[in-house]
Length: 311
Ligand SMILES: Nc1ncnc2c1ncn2[C@@H]1O[C@H](COP(=O)(O)OP(=O)(O)OP(=O)(O)O)[C@@H](O)[C@H]1O
Ligand SMILES: [Mg+2]
Image 1: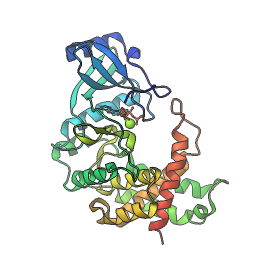
Image 2: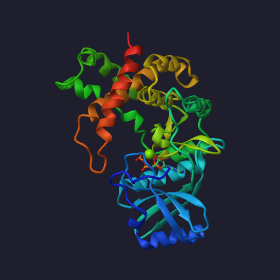
Image 3: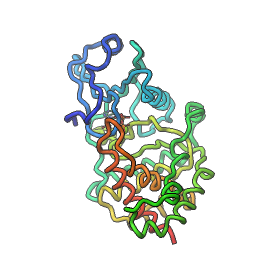
């Protein structure tokens, strides 16, 4: 699963020696290899460490003045309070030294799931989402997310594009701009709920572990919200992976997480697609050269699904 590090990722050797020593002491063994998995857009250390003992662990680390440290600490808090059976790796520890923070997580062994129609991974992911959202989040989880603003609730973009439509906007999209902006405007009032929301569900935030099957990683954006958020986020990813939009639109109508709240699902999809459309047009942020091209593709996939839900 290891490969060349994505551009801009911090490496194990970038971590200050006191923190590396602290980790090796806590793990009871020295680190003999650090492999950066492909996937994701972040710049922090995110690496599978192999210890002299042969054991492997996964570590995320960044300087304390980097906002990603807050996100990593949030992820650690979440991993600690997810209900038993949740599709997530265990938290192994959180360590601070030399103004850096590292979160150590159980290592999952396997590739990203194959979300294409040729694989059963997508079906497994839908089933996991059904299970994850079928009950309200446990109290410990709800407590852990208090004070963490929901990234999903703030998604928008059509309002900005409506105010100043870009010249390259597809004509089909342009003539629906007002309707899209209205759907998106309904989203913030619908964005609340008591279910667990992973908040960033893509194939590169999942690992198909050899023993556990598909498992969700990167819980840094986890919050509570309506059951539909993760399922509706996954839907455009499946279109990007080669599924026919009509098949996925039908799935959204049938899946327990989305079927119960069709208006919320549509409003969320509109906000997410608007966010992609708007952000794809911005300059690339440092260290994430592929992000804008991805957002362009995702915006097209989201729009294909939305078109099937709009009248
Ligand atoms: N517990 C784990 N075991 C093995 N590999 C993992 C584990 N957690 C994450 N990964 C792999 O490492 C990659 C980066 O991890 P993660 O997504 O958590 O980091 P990130 O920096 O927050 O990502 P992003 O760039 O999406 O913000 C994932 O795409 C996945 O391939
Ligand atoms: Mg990630």
